[in-house]
Image 1 (cartoon, rainbow, N blue to C red):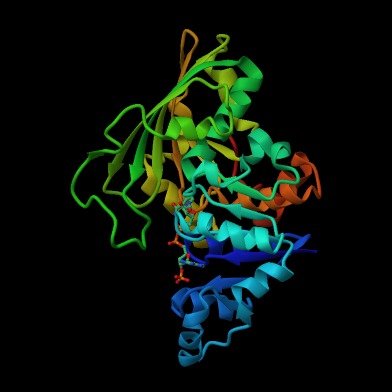
Image 2: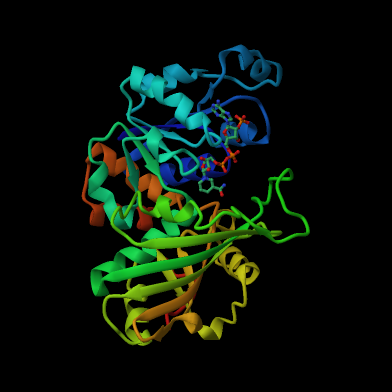
Length: 344
Ligand SMILES: NC(=O)c1ccc[n+]([C@@H]2O[C@H](COP(=O)([O-])OP(=O)(O)OC[C@H]3O[C@@H](n4cnc5c(N)ncnc54)[C@H](OP(=O)(O)O)[C@@H]3O)[C@@H](O)[C@H]2O)c1
């Protein structure tokens, strides 16, 4: 059994801990928190050992009546791997601790690529992180784009990618984010940093991106144009993407008009927390104009990186192949159960 520590038990960390629990070859060694709150209470209720991320604040758990198993350094030392899902920047600060205890660690997409030995996406570069010490599971947006670009490159070649990312202002629980009533070019300088981030997965890819922020919390939306190396028809591209394991090509008959309806679908399907782990591509939007592919895809920012973290654990520890890992992760999480009764 792979012993997995989760340091940073928030939006991403708690989802990764739940996904790890479901895997036949791993278990959660413990989770680390800085303070007692509703998430600490939920972790204890689930039976996770709770470790204090900041020694001086240990007494706050005791005062709240929450038992602490130890300090985060003890958790790091005894674990085979750490998933660090701390807020952006904190993960990079934690790297020296992981190196000190010689425990491989997965940081998240909020960290700079320079903070890690390699960046990871299961579909695109699983083998590239084998044996690495510090790896970054790329951001939700870069994960969504990598899953899309990898099969297109393999099947047709890609000459140029252009994407406009319409990004949610914050996650549902982030009351301090926005905008509340505005549409922000963000970042306003172009092209945006998202393209170079995709280049951490595909170094030789020509990609330009633009970013906006809107008053929404549900999902990100990508407006995508890919100039392919050949000219397949739209139906062939659709079949290619339908055959992928983490893309959901939305059939027209579902009547999913936007992210809100997709969220409802996931909740109706009984997905935990209403999570949508796969890229959601509108089938009607899939169009070819000469060599240019156009499509819209929605990305659930809170959950698409979760199966990627599970695969990254196996990739770093070199316990199995990409195909086997993705198959295991999907089966254990329920990702293979289609969101719809039929795929049309
Ligand atoms: N949410 C997304 O949309 C999303 C998507 C993809 C990737 N990411 C990336 O994933 C990472 C985590 O993001 P998130 O959205 O999960 O953030 P989050 O919801 O704020 O969770 C992070 C958690 O880390 C804990 N924490 C803070 N300082 C800590 C420390 N020194 N040691 C241990 N734990 C600490 C906080 O909990 P306590 O202080 O209560 O312990 C907090 O709940 C970031 O790099 C982010 O960019 C986020």
